[in-house]
Structures are given as C-alpha cells and as structure tokens.
Image: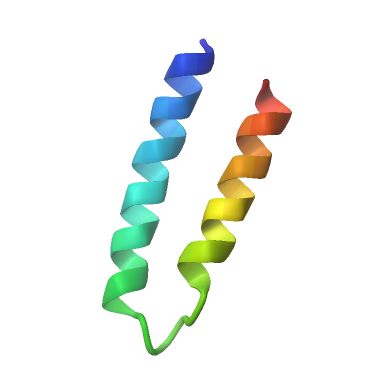
Length: 46
C-alpha cells in the first residue's frame, strides 16, 4: 500500500515538475513548493 502511494505521488510530482519547467517564468519556485507539499502528504499518509 505504501509503495503504491509513493508511486502515485511520484507520477503526480513528475507531471507537476514538467508543468513547472514549461511555465518557469510564470510560476517561480513552484516545483520546490510542490515537492515539499508532496513529501508532507506522503509522511502523513504513512
């Protein structure tokens, strides 16, 4: 179950990271904030 959640989180992160690269000027620091948020969510889920 934990592994499945981690895989799902990784897929979401990869998608958001890709979006962040495309909109780098529009949303500065978006990728870092998203990573911190996703880490917090996975810790809470465990």
